[in-house]
Length: 113
Image (cartoon, rainbow, N blue to C red; front, side, top):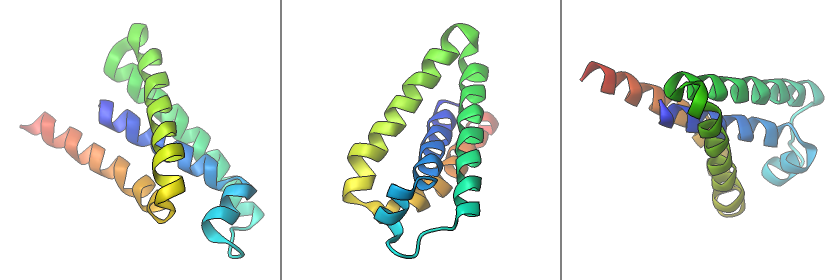
């Protein structure tokens, strides 16, 4: 569940990042998304943030869950800001799409095994 919280937080930050004009230009140049797509990305980012919070609270309980959520948000923000965005910008979107799926599969496999 911890990996899933991190993956959802990462995807949330990527969606929020891509909903801003500045980052659209950085990642796509002149082929940036339209206003409607950017609005959907904005709402998806906040929905993924709420999902990451819910996963952290379910995994760790109300006493530690919110703190765990803040930690995953911080770690995922650092991974994007200092890791992928400046050095591997082409990896940002694929990572945001595949990390939650991989974390969910890993969680299900650990529950079965």
